[in-house]
Image (tube, rainbow over the protein chains, first blue to last red):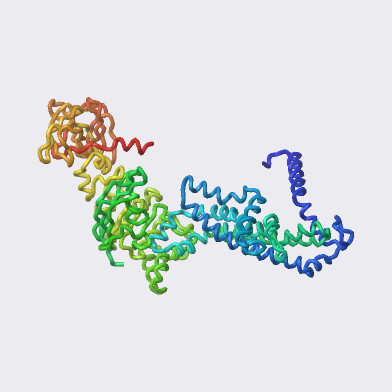
Length: 266
Length: 370
């Protein structure tokens, strides 16, 4: 690689930088926009101020939508981790066509268009009165988050030698003790990654949320989507900035946890 | 750790996976304190048999008893067995002490008792000072000892080992074999040991069970298997052997009248079990029992030509070719000056030749190779 002529290397680096800029700059542009003093979305802003952040937290609708989003994302993460981990463990215990079929089933939410999942879930939720509830939205998001858990935990489980399980069993350990003492320490990295993906999947999800949200419990993305059609003010950029910040913090956290957990199984 | 472990009894135990028979119905009895080795090539059913004893696999038929207890349908968790795996299966996220203490913690033994037993077994396995090491900081031989310590510390009724030395280099393997033997003689605990290495089996075992194609071929002390193998497979697997195809004309008691085209003569030899008149059989002569005569007196022995001479220290190993083209291996005390290419006559004492059943499992061999 380093043997490339200098001119080519410069060109390659420049190309990469351009692609990165194209990907990242539009997203980052919401940060200065959110600091605009005037009530217009403009780039670059003529004068800076934190006035719209104040507005965001003063407005109960904005503020409560953030809380709802965090609540739903937290519930989703817990549900997806429990169901997905059990599914991943189960998938390791079956073989052949059953495993292929079940894996496809668990990964389907990643492939099926979200709008299809949303309509189907909406229709089913109506029958049991889950529409407009926090738990209803969490369950819908759990469907979308499950594949990330099944994949991440599944990869971690592959680092576990089946003989460790047999050895623990022969030494007298029951299934729960084996899970806690042998399996869990090896899937912590997978669980951490899965938790972040689940949380973020739910936190920025808008399609299912639009279908399921009631008047009193809109999520932040739903509130942004609604607001953008009514009032085109920098408060939307504030909300977007909050979402970016939370996502960045979560990924940074998982990164700082994972290497430590990685050392143990090696 | 003075308890000797319990006896083990398998009656009619078999295992089938769909249409594949991993183990034919098998009867084995192991006495308390005995060291039994299951010896056989890969795919012979020896590991299946071990897993059945351990409780990792449920038998298709038959019953398993450990001591007085019928454990046929009891899981490994409740069998009180100590298992040493081929790859040791040590928990890599735990220290040596945590690995060894695992079975004791699970049993919720008092802290003081756990500590006492761990330090006892650490001393026994010469692992003092390694208690707080991580598994990956240990050499292969040390890991092997930790695996054995982890299995022994729970004072199991049975100690089971699945090719525990196959990951060690040859020199270390020798040393550990002798250590295992010494350990067994000192603290003798009922042991079932799986290996494909006949030398290992000879060093370690009180008795050896030779297995092939999911079937127990013969079980007995090493000397018995060597001197009176029940068929050609056992003869070929334990020690070195010359097997010459023969036809059996008649069997009377322990004597068989045979004709050997390869030797161009007929004579009598002792008959192994299952040898029947008219059936194909093999004549077994161990290399050390082949006598080589270089004088050219006719009618004394079978004419042959020396094609190879290998110096083995106190012994010289000769390969001779019979007129029929068959090769015979002979071992002689070193010092005989027999040149390659010279014509000789070979013979043996009649009581040293034994007629054994041919292998009856050739069609299965093809299946294994597929």
